[in-house]
Length: 166
Image 1 (cartoon, rainbow, N blue to C red):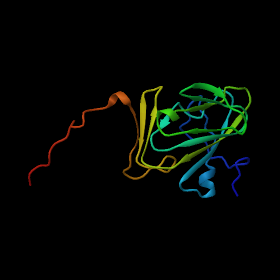
Image 2: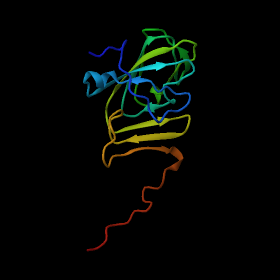
Image 3: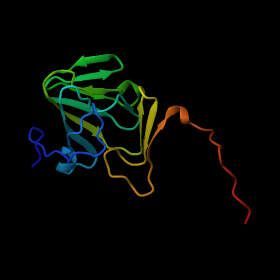
Image 4: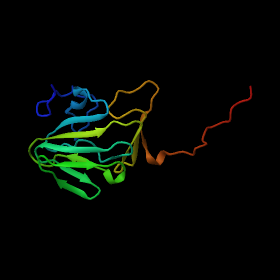
């Protein structure tokens, strides 16, 4: 049985980045969910869950399980209370970042749709991530899983040639 207060945390990820949390329990997957993602994150003081971002294809929601994490939205930063729920709609109005700016550990439950394909935009670093699969699912053979600087866009016709005659 899966329990958000006593979850099984994933093994540490080799792709750890200083300042960003790496302790996650994919409780939705552990419970057998296929269309709704649910992950418990432990946020030590001074750590953020992820960079500031918004998603084009998937709505998310955070539920504070313990502690007092802070949330950044287009309106700015604010501190959250235990039990508080905050939805993040698709698009720029749902941009968010969760961080623990206090001095006690915090735990949050992040819920999300698992729609693919997905585009994630990172306004602070002027990047976009493109996935041909639902977020959180394993990479697929021949699929797209890439991050680009938004200024790297090219002309639609660049390097394109009409079909050759037989």
